[in-house]
Every structure is written in C-alpha cells, then in structure tokens.
Amino acid sequence: MRMGFRWFGEGNDTISLQDIKQIPGTEGIVWALHDIPVGEEWPMEKILEVKEQADKFNLNIDVVESVNIHEDIKLGLPTRDRYIQNYNTTIERLAAVGVKVICYNFMPIFDWFRVDLYKPLSDGSTALFYEHAKVKDIDPFELVNQNANNLEYKMPGWEPERLKDLSNLFEAYKNVSEEKLWNNLAYFLESVIPVAEKHDIKMAIHPDDPPWSIFGLPRIITNKENIRKHLNLVDSPYNGVTLCSGSLGANPSNNIPEMIREFADRIPFAHIRNIKVFENGDFVETSHRSCDGSVDINEIVKAYHEVGYTGYVRPDHGRHIWGEKCRPGYGLYDRALGIMYLWGIWDTLERIKESR
Ligand code: DNO
Image 1 (cartoon, protein in one colour):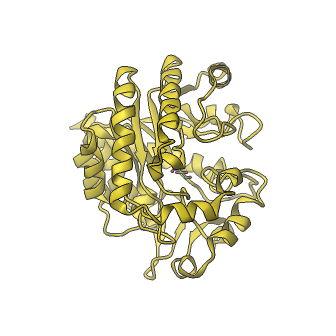
Image 2 (cartoon, protein in one colour; image 1 turned 45 degrees about the horizontal axis):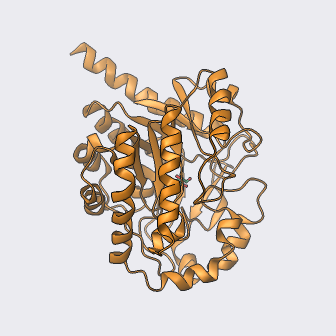
C-alpha cells in the first residue's frame, strides 16, 4: 500500500508539509483546490503551485480528493453537459502533472454527515459523532448553520457557498429517485471514464457517509451490491471505488474484508479508519485501533495484504487529541497514530509472509 495524508493547502491547513513528511512511510499528499467553485475547471497555474509545494518535500500529488460533482450533474439537469466538460478538462490537466487517482462522491447536497463535531470521549478527546434519532428530527438548515458556518476552517463537503442554496436544492431533489440518481451517475461515467482512461487517471467514487438516505435524499453507494452495480455501469479499470472503511462500516451488515477481496483490482484508493457503532445506530469516530471501535482494522489490512494491494491509502478522520486545534476530524496527531497502526499491521504481515 502507498500511504498518503490529506492536506488542505497552504494557508488552509493547520498542518504543514514538513509535518506530513515526518510521518513514517508517508509518500504523498491527498489534495484538492478547495477554493475553486464546484463545477469550474481547475486552473493549471494553481495545480502547478501545489505540485511545486509538494515537490519541495519530495511528496507525491498522485491522489486528488475530491474533484466534486456539480449538483446539476447529480440532478441530471440539461446544464450538466457544461459541467461534465469542465470536469473532463480538469482530468486532462491533472493527468498532465502526473495525478493517478481522482476521488469524488455522488451524494446529493451533503457529503459526509454528522451531528456533533466535538463529541467528548471518555479519554478527554473529542471526535465526530452521528446521532441517529437527532438526524430524524433535526432541521438540516439549522445544522448547516451550526456546523458549516461557524468554523474557522471550512469542512470538506460543507462549504457554506455550496450549501447556501439549500432550499432550492431540496426542492429539486424531490424529483430524483434512487433510480434516477443511478441514471445520472451512469451518464456522468459514460462521459468521463473514456477521458480518464485515455489520460491514465483512475476515478474512485467514495461511498456515501453514512451509507443510507438522510432527509429523504437518495443515496446509492452504500453496500457491496451497489458498489458492484456502480463498477458495472462502465466496466473499466478506470471506474473504481475509494473503499472507505469508516463510511461503509457505519452499517454493521457491510462486510468490508469481503468487499476488498471481491473488488481488489477496482480499488485504486482506500480510506482506512475506525468508528464505534452503538446499538441504536449512533456512531462515533475512534482511534484506528481495532479494539477501540466496531470496524476490524486488522482484518481489513489483512485483506488488503492478502490481495497484494499496491493502491493508495490514507488514514481518515481522527479524534482531536493532545489539545490540538484543527479542522474537525483532520488533526495531525491521531491520523499520524493511525498511519503507524496501519504500518504496524502491514509490516508484521510482510514479516510473516517472508518467513514462510
Ligand atoms: C470526509 C471525506 C469525504 C470525502 C468525499 C469524497 O472527510 O472522507 O468528504 O472526501 O466524500 O468525495
């Protein structure tokens, strides 16, 4: 596995490239141009700026997360073609600087969803928390105000400018069933996968987080059957998945090692993180250690090792520990600890393999 670390860019992250470079076994940044509005082409000068910054630390920029999808594409509006064209231009430009994987998601309106970004844990740290009952009752508008507008750092997927049109978006999605969303996804893939193929960039869809419908909005990348369906929409090695253990793991019936074995050659990128799922369906993000959560990280790394995984990996969210002030879920310390846990398992498996 090739380890990367998500970085939000110069002046937009509490963590420096120097910090990232010092995390053992970390080869690259997982990055994006967060200030380019969704749907617009990414300017080459800005792409090159990130490349230069990363080059100074000898970190690769192979994985982009995310080139987000304009809502008109997900809604299947006639205006989608212009945005798909822009998307293809961005793919071409990213390929020109050596990018290998683009992560994206196809979740209507909201990206990942939590109710509390600083839930206190018993060890005195805080972490992202999803409360089932509250999501049923809560007014999404209120939550957006609370979560997205009052933070020092914008959260990925929760950019206030993206969500300002919330009521119109909810209205527009009234006409979009799951089936329609699948059709809109297929339309998008049929256009971008040939471009990705030509430029040798793998497209990797991120599962829905949490993997079920919220606020009556359709969500489709939720389980093994649906991931299989996605991969078959355009059956190309360039149409892949970002297998995120934490997103899929929120539904205990998702067997992630099984998915790794089935989809091995269609997982160009993996997010590996742990969550603790409670009986009532609530979940909280925990350390990466298997015994701290409900997702068996050992078994997951074992499955990747078994299939001879050579794709990209990153730890995902971490808790906020040691008094760190950071973007929610994206501190340095807990994610760096996560990386060391992943390598600990991997290196041990390698030793065992060598000694056989
Ligand atoms: C959350 C992330 C997601 C992810 C997107 C991919 O922290 O895992 O925001 O980047 O869903 O497009």
